[in-house]
Image (cartoon, rainbow, N blue to C red; front, side, top):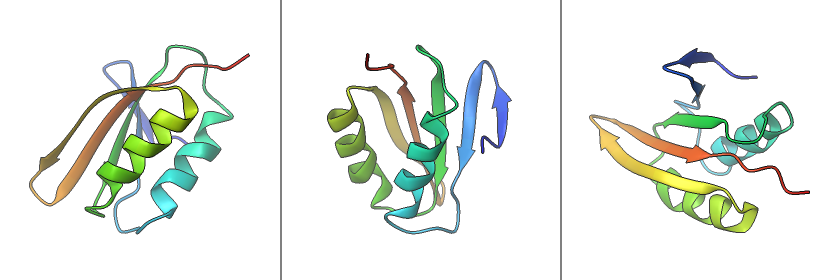
Length: 83
C-alpha cells in the first residue's frame, strides 16, 4: 500500500484522487503501520487538508503539518496505535 519510504517517512501518494479516497487509502495503510511511523501524504484534492485534520483528530494521530507545494497538498502526520 505504501508508495515508498523517504527520510524515514512513509510516502502515500494519492495524487489524482478526490475525497474521500485519500483518507480511505490512509485508513488501509494504517493496518500496516507501527506506533510512531510518520506518514507523508501527497494529494491533489484541495479538500485533503480538512479531511486529514478531521481524520487525525478522530483517530488520535498527531497532525504535524499540511501545506501546498505547487499543485500538490502535502500532509504529514504521526501514527499512534490505539490499544
